[in-house]
Image (spheres, rainbow, N blue to C red):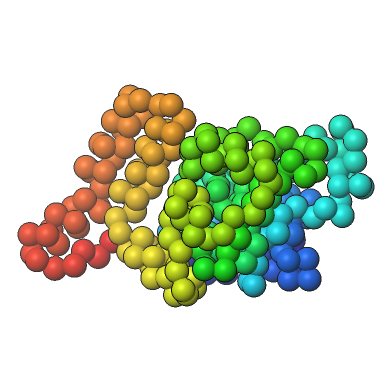
Length: 252
């Protein structure tokens, strides 16, 4: 694990905090390598229904550039480092539970990679976004590039990657890079995460699986029909119907 990644939980909502303020929350190799284990813990804990990923003043300024001349030096070092980044990003993207990125300040490079791996992105008005491999002579990972294209479309993905420029929160909202721009990120993310945690989890998790399948080019098949059957025979479904008929809030 890493001293710069802190996992905590309040009720059904877990929070993963990137806490390396001296480096604007830049992600080191050690931090990337810690993500799969942390996410596995979140996945295994049935009491956790939603994961929030946040920074502090800054979400994350990206990868720790100081490591590029050491751990990431040469083709072999770059491949080894890139594998850790990819595995960390995939651990977030493939978590079966909803994830929300709470974004303030810089969300650049690897920081944007983490945010794009989340299901929902809520940004502060001061948030700034960029993906900067064109400043470093490296190629952005395929799956992370696909996440960017899925979010903003190919034209904006090209502009972001070709220019390596930073864009402001208003632009990020307009092009679909973030879901919302708000005055108080912490308050809005608390409200949204608790709302999602209070919904029928068989519905929420099933929806995530189907949406991810659609973006990966999937079609309705036995996998999707099994989700329908699971929902129809679940305790959540029975409670939802009973609550509706009894005209009361459901207790999922």
